[in-house]
Image (cartoon, protein in one colour):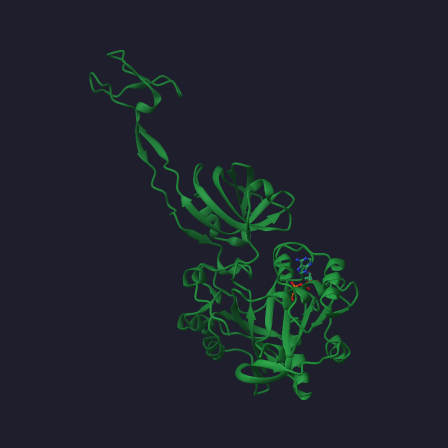
Length: 446
Ligand code: ATP
């Protein structure tokens, strides 16, 4: 019965730096310690990505949330620590937890010397209002506002330094997982974090080919392994996918440095939940938008190798960019022509106001006519001569005149099609739904 399912939610964010740690590792730390005090995970741990356009994010703007209590009912394996399986239960009870009990466990892992690390921990007996999640994934929130919401909902929170992490921590407790995917993360033993690690590229390719529901493992255009982080963090690799069982098998296909723990996270990655449909005039800084419009200026290359074109709707015009890191995607953008109708998905860059494209849907290709020859004279059949640009044609012999559009044209063969195009895996954002997933749409809940 619902009323009896007592458990607590713990949300954590902003604990790491660019060079080390990873907030998701704290799930392992907490689960290990709580297990000793007889507490279980209720449902899988959650990795919730928030507005990717927030300038003060460290990397992927991710927060984590776990629900704990004394577990009962159906249970599933969601991880392993030193060979011991970690289960998540369907139901929980007696989920009492004091913030003071968990702060000492986590504190040692916070990278507090990093100026931009401002950890926040939130504990709540109930899920927080869903709109908090939607605001955090799509807009910008301030700490004072979030604190008020937490107080109204009787949630407890703890802030380190400016405590900005409570924003993400709260949003992770507010997420309802209406759309979701999974990520299985493997963790190195603590004494190996700073050491060189190894992942066999061929094993990643093989895993990618043998699994059906995983995504963004390998970039075949750029020969790039996308499952390992760029910096030396506790994470060795992370595999994203739709099927938990398949992910558990997939991790065993990777040949790598040994790891001693893994966790399966429920996540909003690959859901496109950061995007909102907008008219061009309504586009605001920090947003992630879907815009429909017609191409009014074809792509030009700017310094750094970026390709910029312009679209227009009935409310205004805006520049759209395929930046250099999007590699071959720029070739598609360079083939757009004035008059093409497109739907652009991307984040708003404020200065200069530009859309940083994640994917594009070409709705209608404009018919481009190119002149192949001057018209023939309707009387004598000879090719007519041009009277100058835009002035039409005249037959020298018969003196007959014809307008400009009497010339012979052919329809230009377009090298792009009316379909979706996306940036390559190497440039993919965590929240962006890959086309592979868009076509499957088989989201199932744990
Ligand atoms: P990592 O991916 O390595 O965990 P990160 O990219 O998640 O790091 P954080 O260090 O968590 O970056 O920093 C993001 C900060 O932005 C956090 O303090 C978080 O609370 C805050 N934040 C997240 N979403 C919003 C939002 N919509 N409005 C305001 N602040 C936000």
